[in-house]
Image: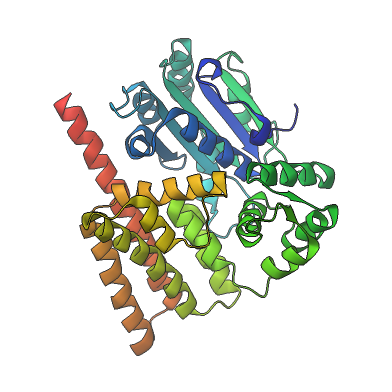
Length: 378
């Protein structure tokens, strides 16, 4: 099976399969594919309604299939349903329960899934991701590969070898209007490794740093990607922006394991929600969105066409979807946590992780209520 690369995969409405099944270590390739699906099929307004995510552990396939068959909201004619599971990859939270749960597929589950693909919803794309060190003998791999390839396309997510990785970096930079010297790409791999998520973030930082210059050189990599700098600001903000609770918690755990100061983590969280609150208030004052974006993200110029468009869309998608009371709640909670960290022996990591879990829990509950209300009216 050929290595999968979403940067060269064309996503067109008239050529989409009903389901894409991804398995392997380089989970980020699947995330990039889901991102492209969202860009092609949905407006930012629709993503909060017509994109559903399930954790394979503890869920029922009947619920997934029922969601796939549910007509999308009027914001978009398309629905994307994402099912994820994490197999053994060294994550401490990857318990035996999670590993075994990801493997279970009852005869009833198989029957429900097979019946669905006999007549799948015409405007629904189901994406199933099993991340980790997965063999082709894995029960879920064997099952999904056995389904009709006209309906279900399977892709193995292999870590990219050096020559393929450098081609991948070059294509990603080209999408940002940049190119790089071979020495710069080699040095970036030395610093970051082969983790595509981290490389992606570093490339976007390099695109911002080089401003009007088209070529990224070795000195740029040394200046921008020096790992004496804190990674938490980039990683945590990116995970919060994308609504990725799992990656947020992984980033926080890594930050504290590597000795990141709690005040730095709190600064990142406070800045994230403060920017959203300011944008919301400035919109109420009648300011233009481009003016607001330039005030909050002065380093991102309109000349960075793709990066500007992606960041602009990400910011205002959150601003439009998060009610003012939710932003106020987040700011108040962070103030309480800051006081507890400074005046008590409470674990800063526990307090911050609990806040992040509560934040995403509130968003998921609000989304479920919107869907239930919509179904009640239909």
